[in-house]
Image 1 (cartoon, helix red, strand yellow):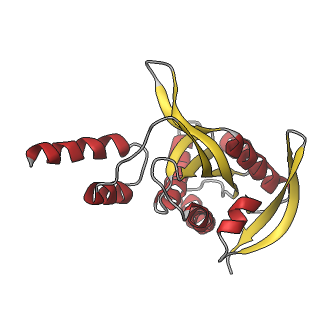
Image 2: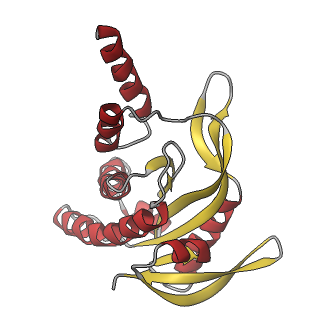
Length: 223
């Protein structure tokens, strides 16, 4: 009994760096085994969240106050995605990259990613209330979501590495996030995500181009 208990605690500690506490607790209770092995997955869902105009915002904030601002921002964004079952892949400047259907199987990944994106939009309003009270600049975000083939693995050197997602799905998602900013859309998704997340409202938007191939994007909004 004690060996089983300590085994579960070790599992929770290792995987807790990637997933929300609620999901980790559920995995421990139901004995779902996390899978951090390197593999190609045909239906990973990836989200990239970007703060619009970050460079100008950062320049307007005193250097010693910027971490306060960004940490509060990340708190709102990360809570939205982890509450919907994602793991946070990485932070790149102001960008947050999240993914579903990697560490654990999740057939509802496209639906959950769309719900998380809409919650992020709501969370930004809460963040701006806090920012206004703290005499910080207000922020806005744009989001790209894509579903498709990706490679999930621990990537890096022997001494330092991170579990991350790479591949075509990341490239498409990055294009969607950039396009969202260009066309002033809050959330753009690819066709695969749209097909699998049917309960939301989508409107056809701009096309994106990757490796001489065009992909249709769709703007997401709540019904």
